[in-house]
Length: 204
Image (cartoon, rainbow, N blue to C red):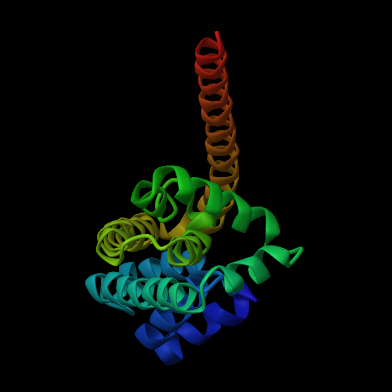
């Protein structure tokens, strides 16, 4: 899959970057991050222009985010429930739903930066949960800018190490995602413990 997509970059260039990033924001499994890094490498070699690569990735990200959010908002919780029912996406969708319910727009921003695997699912979760469009858009656009520039610049400055960097980022993302889930679970337990304490005091 990755080799096929990368082979199309010299042919379709910026259109391919925008399309792949947009589709990945809809939770379609495409190698968007590797593609943007590789495109940054192409820019370093003079085959593409760096700011155009960043712009195409950013545009695709924003369009994909808005599509997922508004689709879930229009179709309501039923659409998100069907996404959670799929074995391939149930875990990520449920985690995204939990994070959005607790942290709102902050979870949307985190889903485009430090816990990127949750990105598409926070869009769907935000729309289904009725998160305000303005709050979602502000967080999503900021996160998209960081994501697009970050991956393109990594490829631009480390063009000969893209494979190693991609593997490292996958490992780091998994570690951070586990940490965020653990932190969320701890926060929930702490809230439940405090609530139980208040109920006990009221009962006295």
